[in-house]
Image (cartoon, rainbow, N blue to C red):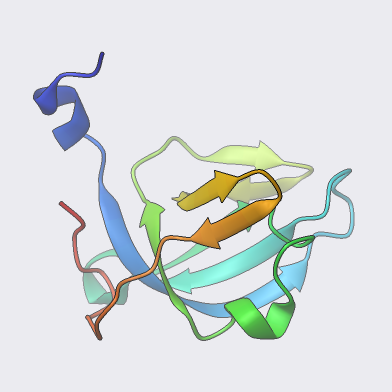
Length: 109
């Protein structure tokens, strides 16, 4: 079990996907995303394994929920500075997105 204090340590923010480029050297179908989290955090590169589930045009321009305080990780030679959040059921994957217009960088509670 995770305590409420442990959960509060996870910084989840809303970011806008500016660009989604195929990660050509990754073994699995991945995108290298450029995500804008507003003035406080700025732009981040996030590697996401969703290329087989989302076309480039479906993800670019969308606002999505991301964890922004993970340690950077190299994924097939590209440093990823966050993690997108999605729900999965069988073959269905659904990005976690705000249901109303909200500013980039907004904190998810």
